[in-house]
Amino acid sequence: RPYNTYGPRDHFESNNSHVIAALIKRLHSGENPLTVWGDGSQTRSFLYVDDAVSGLLLAAQRESPEVINLGSDEEVTIKDLAERIVKISDINCDIVFDKSKPAGQARRACDTTAAKAAGFTAMVGLDEGLRRTIGWYRRTLEHKNPEQDR
Image (cartoon, rainbow, N blue to C red; front, side, top):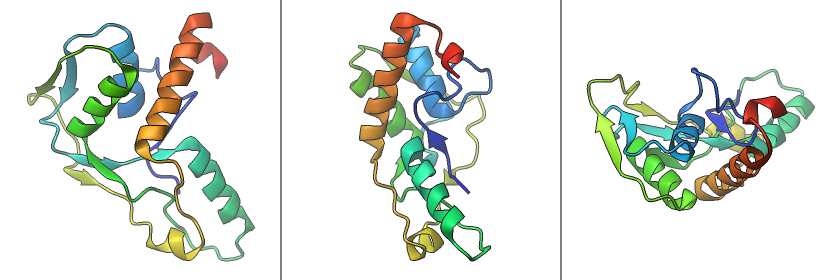
């Protein structure tokens, strides 16, 4: 069971996009200040798509029907996530938090105990995954709408 997967070819244009894709799209569309729902204190762990694929391949080779969470142990606040996306994008932008909007669960972190026992560990850290995702998004924007490549 992949946990909060993100990366190239995510749903950047969708009204239902996940937090990383939504923040990248809105930042690169010129939103300033960048508005983040909630107060930013809620935490999440994210899994880069390459790690998700590796984990799924590993799980497919297992004989055990046990369900395992494929995720990362790197847990960040949404505030920290937004700041990292702005910094890695190298876009001068303020970030504001809209506490009148729902923030979701206070904490959504993956228990990776079973995955590690099965031999899975996420290899791509959040900053590197964000660099790859933002780079892909920018390259794709130069040529076409990101959703056309799905």
